[in-house]
Image (tube, rainbow over all chains, first blue to last red; front, top):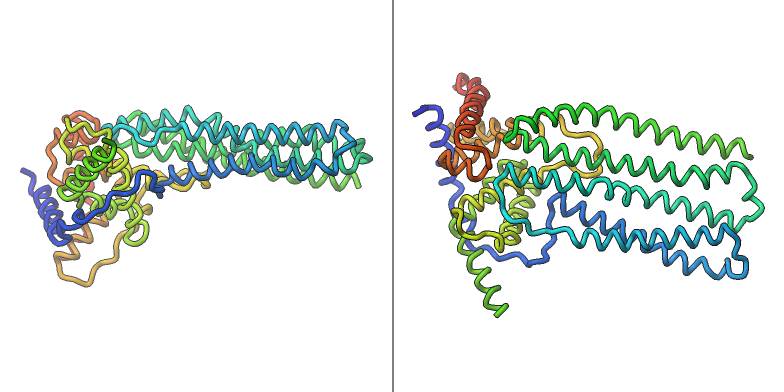
Length: 237
Length: 174
């Protein structure tokens, strides 16, 4: 027997004795719907909130209808179409996360982490697109509402560029940002898995380097988009 | 009928908690600095035991199942916040700060040094080290971790060596 092992185990045993074994006694079962504090539960709540935000577009729609009544030009139809799209996506998002299972059967650590990794990998593309859509949809609705209220400005090139390119670009970039966040999220699982799976350790190292480069690129592109917006606005004045 | 099932589930939960409930604070201490986070993780482990109790068939040993759930919860609880784009550095030493040396005697200092050494292991390695310190057999560690018993032996040898290396300077001071 290794004396070092025995010594450390002895030390651990003495700590257990010092802490006492009463810590488990007198527990109360948590409610079935008790809110968890793990990052996964927080993310789930965040996605739910984002879904409700999208559905909130219907309130904007109801409030916006009276001023637009009687002059249904393409811009007004655009406002309605994008607000409806946001609402539909919000409803889909809420229904989707409701279908996510919470009570997974207990599995050995290596398998449960691998299952979780696979699950989040499959959720990632749609989740990134849905979360990235919120700022883009808000921008499109704002832009169209502005043009609907100021019909004379719809001929200006800058407004057309903001409308045609601004929303999709913002959607693309915001989705990419969420993709990167989810990737960092997946790396956490992969690095935990690395202790049990050497292949995961190698993948983790490669992905980590990639993630660092991508973060810099995303920040630079967001800055560029912001600068381009300011520049176009300034040139149009 | 449903009330009976609920009562049975509650009884089973309280029975398991009475026998192995100490796993929750031990794992929480292992993965978080003392304070609010540790209390949150401990609470989360209990919640996960409760949630996954329906999936526990009883074929595995209760302690094996409770270690599995507790360590899985700790490994995922510790994950960095979703807002952050950059991943954690590979070295996890800074994820759990070394506890300050307690004012107590030599034994207390040694325990504190052991926790400091465990905090410097990667989270997955820490799980294996914890199971070994709990005197689980290689077979039980294999059942909890999902790697085969021979690999468990190799990994534990490496981890013990690492712990020994980390603890060595402190031992020399004494």
